[in-house]
Image (cartoon, rainbow, N blue to C red; front, side, top):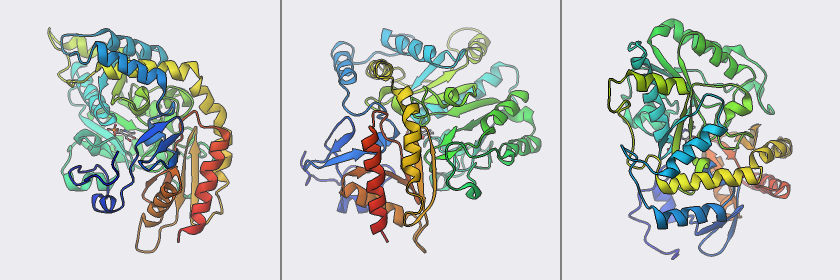
Length: 436
Ligand code: PLP
């Protein structure tokens, strides 16, 4: 890879294109816990790429499965046709998901999974004789990808501003961020005020107008905002009582990050629909999925007189390469016990990240499973600049972290060693001493 190549044509996503093209940060290869730059520098991956390479990079069983599939079945449509791998992967996920959540709709990204889940929710109520249930409830600081449904229910203002007006039938409940419980370890203590906010919206709009509530069990992209104890349980109880579907967006919290296939299983709360992406193929081939309760699938399919029941899908829904990568990834997770490994490493992880309390600029640290956030105080009149400097310096010194606003987000591959955990944390600590 030529580091001096022309970087002009690629309009990069969620990137400061002008800055990047002056000071590019290029990755040329990856293996296990590390990336390598074109000039051969080794970068320790503290973020599983982008929350997706949960089994580590370049895993042979996964690359072999993709290679084999590319040679035998490059593409097959899944509209009125099928191929074995898509069915096998759906069956595999169904076996691993909570009891009864055994109908899987495939998409190609988390964003598509989210919009598919919102459509399933709307279609379900129409099929179920309640067509007036059209409102969708998201949450402030929620991130649900970049499609129009996802940004409408999402609660990150910068992702919405340029595209408004969005879906007109959306409300947001308050985020679970509580500055009064800084440095909480794991789930913060119970605080009913957050879940009670859903009752406020229901009272205002009428439950009979609401189709679904969508939340992340831990808000990832907004900076690892962990649901307080009892919160998900309360949201589940309220939605159930009012006939509102509950969607957990588990694009980040899924696939082992919290110690189980889903956060729902790790935290013991079962929604009606779950979105997955990223780690389901270990990031090796794009794929998203919606896991649905069988009763929802049956209601939607039974309502159609005949023919197609759900007018939605993608050319690449259940793409052979993605399904092959997905099956191989699940095998690696299982063979190596990586979900259980996340659980067993979590206390060490928690201890390590919280050791940064008292480091320069740090104002909060949060963690759950193998994810964590280190929040910094902003520089005056330059929001995000300090964390951005940390990101750049860490990269220059051989560590990949992720930043969102003034928050350093960490989510290492589940194969991370205890020694590498210490390395991630001590490098960040060193960099914090040097950034202004
Ligand atoms: N939902 C959540 C919770 C996410 O964190 C993300 C991406 O980070 C998405 C949806 C969107 O996924 P994608 O970028 O694959 O479209």
